[in-house]
Image 1 (tube, one colour):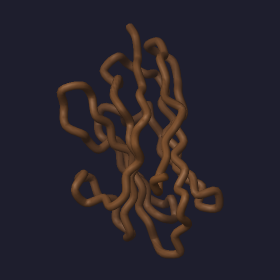
Image 2 (tube, rainbow, N blue to C red; image 1 turned 60 degrees about the horizontal axis):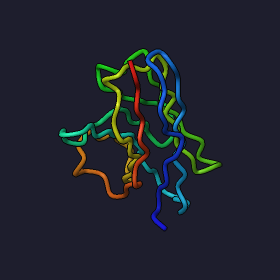
Image 3 (spheres, one colour; image 1 turned 90 degrees about the horizontal axis):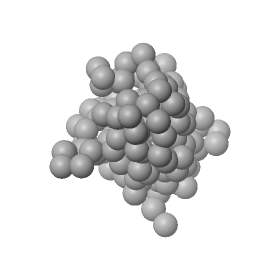
Image 4 (spheres, rainbow, N blue to C red; image 1 turned 180 degrees about the horizontal axis):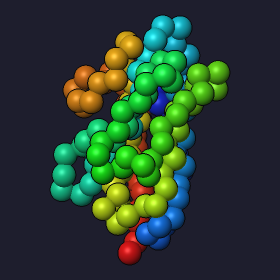
Length: 124
């Protein structure tokens, strides 16, 4: 069992919503930044959204601003991605990732721990 596990993916229609949870199985007592990445077929994994330890700062890639919301519940060790107004181009495997620290990092190589991913497919 890995440290992070995503769920909540599925097949939806354009305009629908999904909420992806990611459970962290190891509680951290130091600041941890968490993020969502996605990987579409034939493309590299890319940053979608990130959130700092105390949820005072978030960052999103341009194409999801206003549609996706990242949040976290540290008491429940869970990260969320609320995805609204889904588009076919959002189709990808979505991964959660974590790294110790306070800054929101956007590069894949900067993250220490990864989940196995959950597939989101949006039909037109």
